[in-house]
Length: 357
Image (cartoon, rainbow, N blue to C red; front, side, top):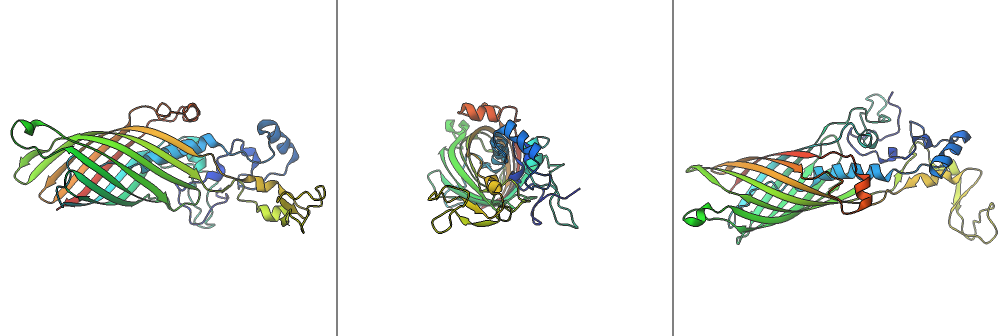
């Protein structure tokens, strides 16, 4: 039954961080605060508090997998477009996720009831693939320097992405003589940031290197395979998340203002002004259900295999990206290693259609 709290505009894979709690007994399935004393006593015994405790490890796992999908794809060979050249393209990236994991089932909205316009209480069928569609423009400035701009959107979410790349081809352009057997080599970096959701902010930075070799097929056709490596850093921060959106903290408290001079809390010693809510016959407990998850600072190491085919101005290409090591093993922090233990490696398939001139 679709009775859970949620925005009528929510999409099935939009984040629902309010569900990521250590003990689900702290809230009803619809997201309201629990008042049953036996349940409150059990919560205190289990978590040390009578309110919801955010599950920071689940948040970190969710951000790690979102971050893999939003990371710069570095979808290009090591050779630039040439002095003054442009490359306009459309890119589609499809990324695998652990769709049967609890952090995807609990941490994303799920389908919306067409009659009530309310989100489900959990996502019972997360998509196994996150899609990201982007428009990109690449511009070369000579001397092996190239800059890229990209904007994109993720279907089934309200999330938009944008960013830029820069790269330097250290060795390119040899076609004849002994040097003609040498591959092209490039190094670069990119950044992507997301918008469209108030629940989290994310920036993904990647440093990469590629080796490629163009293989002429005919006068107007070239096929270029490449292999590359990327180290990606994921910076994710949550917004202020209400873990019990089904309860209005101000109404539950019968809020009468903060405890300040001129509005003292009658339940506290005189001249004790701590700025905390003054409740006129209500309970301030639900204010403690408004939380910010711990920052996620994560790393991923990725291997890239790609190929593109160019006929005159038209270019099509494909790329496969995968983790080199398990996400937990890519972390520098012992805490991050522990929190990401058991999360699976991901892969991304990238397809591109563009024109170079």
